[in-house]
Length: 336
Image (cartoon, rainbow, N blue to C red; front, side):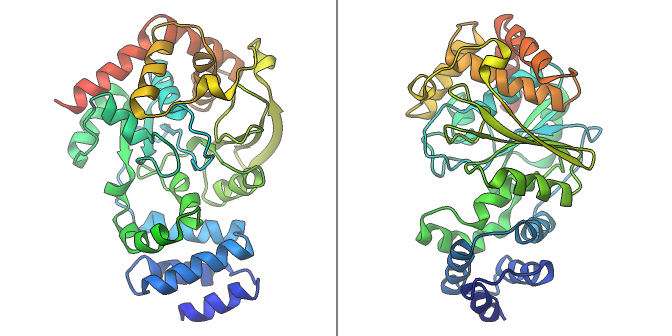
């Protein structure tokens, strides 16, 4: 059956929802050999992946993942696609701690580095956190800290069937696009960065298809999958059932444009150092960029009414030590 789907893709024909669902179901249950998985993913890449195909695949991946519920359903995620190849510090992880310090409940989904020098898991390990937890421990951490890290491989074990093909391909495939849509705690609010501008509107539509409440899909014009400090950022905002598109610039919030070299990190330790400096009140392009993204996260979590108000609060939380305390608290509780 998978060969029929590969043939269809090679003819540049899109798969409908049920065909895609069937293909991914067979792949993620170990029914398809590595060579066929590789052929399927490469044919999908060559054709161009569509909104319906991402939605169907994300639905299957969510069904296959280890899911659990805690909190009141208003928790947020800050997980993006990665894949920009620009080797910047771990902005989404840093901003999630600032948001948590401001009262947001955060269920942060993430992994080790794939295309970057430092993934969210690498950063937290460098900080001394224990990221391998059972469910009871995760719930305890969330209740005590208001932040929990969900290490993707522990929650998406059916991904083991696609790893050999992904490693052989060695470049971005459909599965790079699915992680951000499959938060194990079912977060309905999210700031989701994408590495390509034409994915912004597609991802907003996928989020709508997956019944998300409030999502900001963001792409920096410098190529970053974050709200960037070096240029403007293109955003598609899903709120309720409506999608609106707009651009924001650091200048809109009274911030100076930075450079990529100012926000680059060559290792998890390097990234952690930059974040700790920002959390200790050091003014920099790194602190400004964290404030932009944390401001958006605070807006999504309904702690402020606008992104601008969120940015103002984010600076306060870094400068008064509360963001640093939140990171230290998570490291301490994760090890207890």
